[in-house]
Length: 200
Image 1: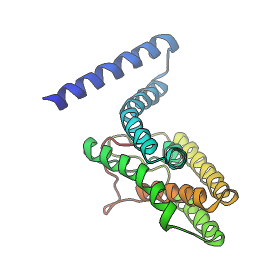
Image 2: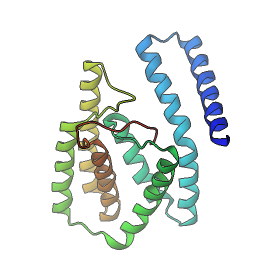
Image 3: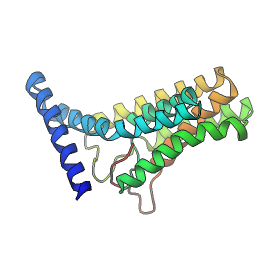
Image 4: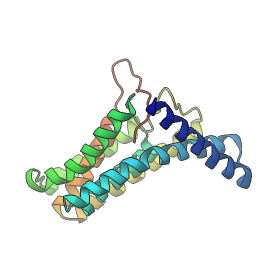
């Protein structure tokens, strides 16, 4: 019952924000669909971000967590990728990954610069092949939009590949792992389809 009420509240808030923007901006159909998707995504992500930032502050890892989270979310915003069917599971995994990865990298991972260079280029190539990866629930039907998203995703991947080389090993590795995570969500499952659902 509580879950149903939560979804209803989420839906009402999303509709009100969308209607307000639609009335003021007079969006075309495709623009309106993108705006609606953006509103739903933001409303779905905000609670996870708040919890993640709170835990990062407790662990004194705010900057690394923000770097990891920001790199992943920006890249995923253009590359798209798989979603989990359960929002609860998504929330738990999102918070766990965003907080634990930067924390563990500080103690366990040390990738040589040459290895980081090769890995960054390899990840960029994979993103160029598979991005953007639409889902069953949110397919990308426009060919021009697909081409645009692919170019933007590859451009961002190239920027991140270069950025991780000019920063120190710790932050460079965090950026690389964010790219690895984005790539894993791009790769098709058995049968060539991506999952539908709602997650970051």
